[in-house]
Image 1 (cartoon, rainbow, N blue to C red):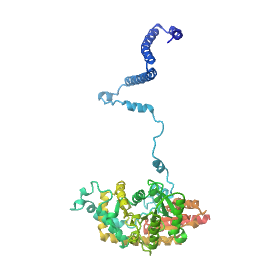
Image 2: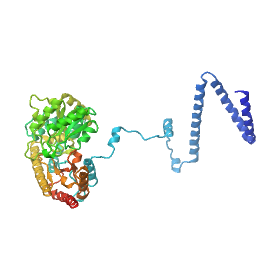
Image 3: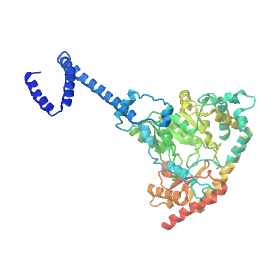
Image 4: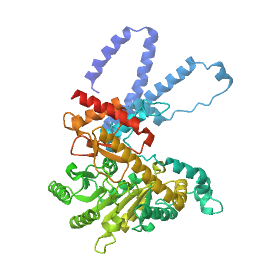
Length: 544
């Protein structure tokens, strides 16, 4: 420090000290002496080797300790100013010291909201499908004959309630024995409480193979070793999607198709669905020409098609693929070197004149490559135990089975459920009675419901299976567009107080078609539903 700089500082110090009293002056001079003691060694350090670096770090360290000193001093003063209450003074309490890491965290604060994954951000958005919007609105105002007779009647969910009395009767009689057993060790608590195989118990696979053989006409045998069990058909489709295609690939899907496929295949596997549009002039039956066009267009766009996803019987139309069409599909898949996923969950819920033929039956031919065909099945429809969550992947492809077994750890059926279902399926007398009764009741409700709709001027597509009818209400929409279909759906929800699924949710190319599930109501409730539909028909005709 030069002499000139020292002179420029001293006059200021003298002027400043003259305005202070002697007591302040003495304390100020004392603090200045302490300051000089600190500055002098700092000065020598700064002027020495690496002076710039040390001169930057030492003030930062001093400032940090000074802030820490002030914080402790404030905390001590606050504790002195806030005496403890009588209750606290009588009984000593344990005070946990606040760690320095938490103190630093709280002092920094949060700059922005914590980040989430892109998938979570997408899934957290409100539903844009009228299928799921309708299901949510029913939950908010569900119909009940006693509690809420003016609520919304659920006709948008293919839930079979026609034979629940048979299921209930069997469970009341056999529940305890099917879970705990008598002398069999496997049915004791040791057989249900510990971990089980992720891909399902062998006993259930054997029982399920027999049941599938029975409901599919007894013309095809299923090998239990080719099965992977899952908690419902939904995870079965998702697991197969992971196994057969990569993110960004696509499946061809004939329209109209089940609205749940959009979530099952697109959400987590990231696989696109390419609609193969079918027309009402052909009763929405699939044809190979439409498949060829859809495949070629996808190829021109650079999209890799890895498979065909079909529902047989069809959901939502209810028609059945003929053996000739199944052979054509297999030839098409082999020619394009792609897979076939056949969803056959309605195989046992037939009521029409057409006979159901599983694609597994067609695979018996020698020239067909079985490794490209995979079947989805479950007990939610044909056995009406959707809440039990029992599904199955059936495939001859060993690599697919090995991968699916590992992935089934995320969709395992609970051990008690597997024991109950195994016992139920093993009761041959009950199963035969159930199959016969279920088909009879479905046929009875279907025929009555469709006949009543016809009298209202609403025609339905020809169907032979399923728990729904595919109703043509194009004459009630105005304008003839998806917008008109949406407005009609809203009338059914708000005026008729019934939930049905519009065709746009099923990717139907023709506006005005609706899926109506009739197995969610009893035969005696049909007049109530028809009367509510009549209100909408009357409103639409009067407005036009």
